[in-house]
Amino acid sequence: METRERSPNYPAFDLEEAIGMVEKVYAAAGRSSISYEATAIALGYGGLNGRSRSKIAALRHYGLVDDAGQSKIRISDRAVDLIHKAGDAPYMQAVRQAALTPPLFSELWAKYAAANDAILINHLVKDRKFSQDGAERVVKSYRETVGFAKLGEASDSGKVETDEIAGFTKPDTGGGTVPPVEHPKPPSQGGGFVSFNFMLSGGVNANIAFSPKPTPRSIDRLIEYLRLMRDDLQEEAQPPEAGQQEGAN
Image 1 (tube, rainbow, N blue to C red):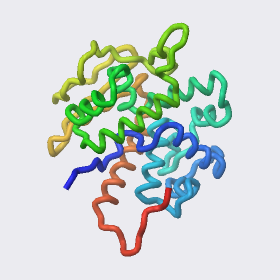
Image 2: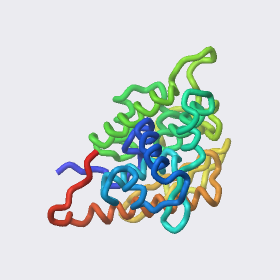
Image 3: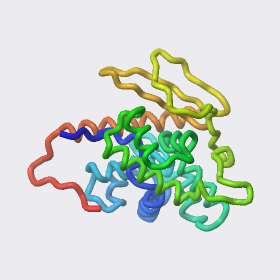
Image 4: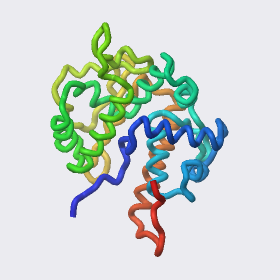
């Protein structure tokens, strides 16, 4: 049986879709703090299930919602820019920031901006241990997001670079492929890009990258997201109740 990724460590939906989702949440709740279940309802579901959790996770990946404490979230400043400033410079700035907020997407753009899909899939399978199907899903979401953000669009100064995007500093990778994670390894810092590598139980490697350097609030948001991932794992490990079906798209 083919193994599939249980942990949503990348946005399962592209950025354009995610903006449409956050517009629904904003229309339902404005900038009020609401629970995950209320967010799922705003997205058109009866409550939390695998599909609604994936959508909420995508909003978090792109920085479209902020942690509001007590297992609640609220629409972020970035999301407000995206909802109200379509078509102008602040809007595109917010789009490009959002596109590179997911660590995996920022890694692919920084190190493989000119690579074709086959190279990206090979990296994800060989270096990041995705399944073939999982890698293809990542590349699809990444390509659609990069295209929507026009990150590869040529201008008078050439292709848009990550260091032109406020809030993102391109790490100095020196080219080549991503090195294997080693343990123990101290935090690496440079140019506003900070990453941490961990060896977890069961031979699982974890890499957490921040750009720019994290704040206590951003660490709290990460903790909340990890809890959401844990809940997804627990939910998927349990057999579905009789007659229970996942919500429609």
